Length: 137
Image (cartoon, rainbow, N blue to C red; front, side):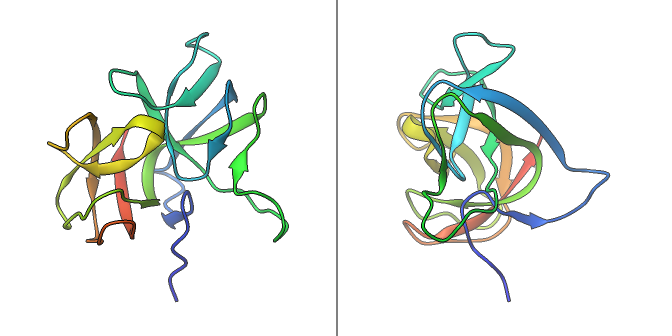
């Protein structure tokens, strides 16, 4: 059974996956694309067009009543390389190159107001559905 949740690892390859840890300037939902923040070494915020993309905000274990996001001024675990579930804003087909837009939303390359990232969708998904994104680091 597959668990399709934003920010959850889709495949665990310990010698391949790459993570980073950054201090959040804003609330960051799990599975959102993040970019470098005001301090580009230590901070992150939600991706916007023209931003310096870092990766995907990883999901962490929570109580069922907790929000599925990182709070402002907290440490965000960012998946920089690997396979991760993301929620797509528009339909994608396996093999489409990935793009990230405002508020860390996901779509395929060529979508207006979205920037290309070094990743490919491994699975297909309908609008507002879940797809596996292969980030190549």
